[in-house]
Image (cartoon, rainbow, N blue to C red; front, side, top):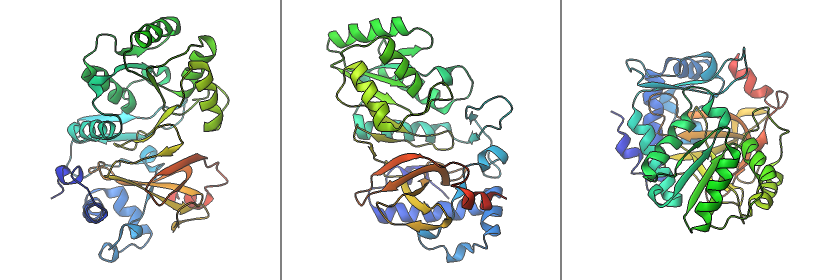
Length: 326
């Protein structure tokens, strides 16, 4: 029986591996699409005795298949953003408390108690649709902050500017979390000098602006908002856990999440540290869907457990991964 309490109690590499192998065997038996995927690769679960031998499901399967354990009922379903006519990823949630446990504990490890902050959220592309896991998480932050000034802002840039300046001047600690294009709009239209505000970008231009490399994006935001560093959150619809960067471009995972890098030409081959390749995520909080996901992100890992996101593969770069989807 898989127990979420053991996942959130992981403190050592051996505990992570033991839990990961248990979850692999559970998902091989109960998640039909993952079972079929492993069988298609001729994987014998009895021979999978290390996390490096666990196959990673291409993230696109969340668009084309139901990635969910047999016999479970979904309490809610998270859905990714997508343009008209495009398939979106759907992530059924069997146990809402596991998701809350993951994002609450993950945040506290890096930043402390959420009640120490006012939370201001600038997430227009997410607020304009239903079932966003990011909106769900930030709404919980806002509620748990217990501060009347916490809240979402949609098309209220000037009002947000005034609120930021007032709170910052009063010495109040603030988290401003926003999608990249909206933070750029704020920084360019309403430049300010913030001293007590932590600015966190969640990535993505969502087709609203030209894509920028992270260093360029962060420099514009630092200049426009007057902050020394820009923090980042790495998460997605298909994950229940998040990694955070405190401004140096290096992301830190919680103990129940791990990044492995695969060869972009051969996605079944893993690479060592400081080598560019495809980001594979092990998220043990995904107990009842799939904990082993091959993303479409490019990155590299470091010996201390941190990782860097370098961008996304284009379709030519992921031809090896595409072969697994067919």
